[in-house]
Image (tube, rainbow, N blue to C red; front, side):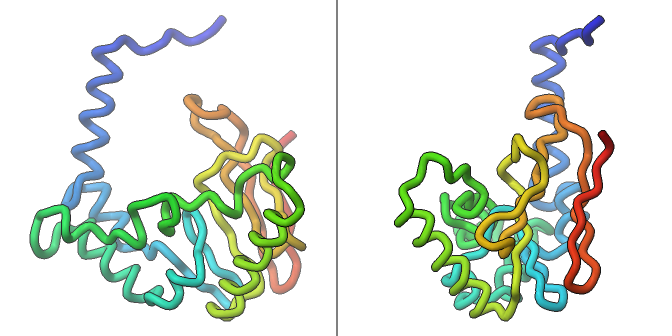
Amino acid sequence: MGTMEPSKGQRQKGVIARSVLLRPGGPLASELARHPVVLKVDDWVFCHGGLLPHHVTYGIEKINNEVSKWMNNVGENDESQIPFIATRGYDSVVWNRLYSRDTTDLEDYHIEQIQSILDTTLQVVGAKAMVVGHTPQTTGVNCKYNCSIWRIDVGMSSGVLDSRPEVLEIRGDKTRINHKK
């Protein structure tokens, strides 16, 4: 027996509640502002969508500070204060899907270009691998490009893939994917 779909009114209330929670200065935005957009731990770098060389050149600390201030609603409250490099545009840290897209429809030279961009990014940031989310992976947590990119968004939301949780465990140089069958 399936669950009942929410009514249009319930969905609208959910959208409104979400926008209140996540607007700059909102309770959830203020909590998220305490966490970095890009995090480097040892020789691993973590971000939502994907890090590119120009993000590293701009400055990871600068990106994290700008997003935190914006989410906490510090400063002017206008569009010019939105940290574009991190949160706006197809190649921003949050929206980038370059490393997590399916490669089966790509030509070899496209794959080589992506590998080159990833290698350059990792070299500039001083990491051996990157972990990204944002793009649900129908096959679950996986790695590509000689395991220098780990894609961990499994689409757990019922509105996406409704999949079971999976965890990428990193211990030293060893990685392991934990999931329930």
